[in-house]
Length: 238
Image (cartoon, rainbow, N blue to C red; front, side):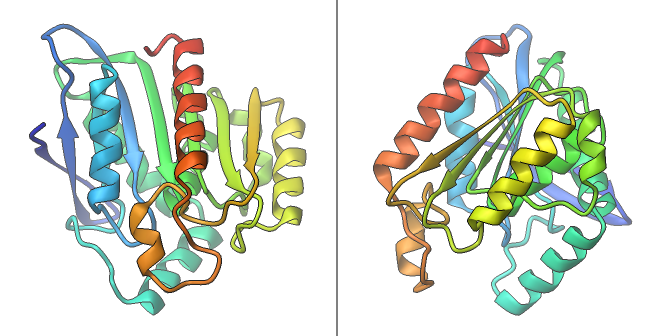
């Protein structure tokens, strides 16, 4: 499956995403696929292609700028801290990506979803908190914290997050706070916690990073994708 370069802008920065089209020629649902913190990697592209095979117009969504992959972990963390302190930054970037997706000729703009991995999952939750017209939002090993929990009442989508029980990035107190946040906001939400599972459990490259608590877990990955497809069917997207 060949991707198509899509450019869009926010905060005076140009972003470069990769679009994958489903088979056929008629209208199709659209989905944003937000990468793990460094940038669009093969992991992101594989997820977007998987969703295109399910019938979506899928945009692998750049939120770092220029389509770059940030390899300096200190720089990645600096950007992460800025995003977490003020969700307006990631909302602007993913909001621009959503507009670029909606502008694609085959996209049915009434049938949209957003899926993210690691901070990309946090980001799509923040996009939903801005009131984006999404039917489904899914986070895989996504950070669950937010600087503005009061905005969760603006979420229109059904929310699903997949979390590893042994994830050092997302401890139990963060999961509990997310549960309270979603409940207080009146959100239709669910969280699945996977045993024997750490951070980045969907990414086969995680084993090579040498980071404690980060590891690929094939069975949890398969289960998370099955649950995701169930939600996409429930919301009329596939």
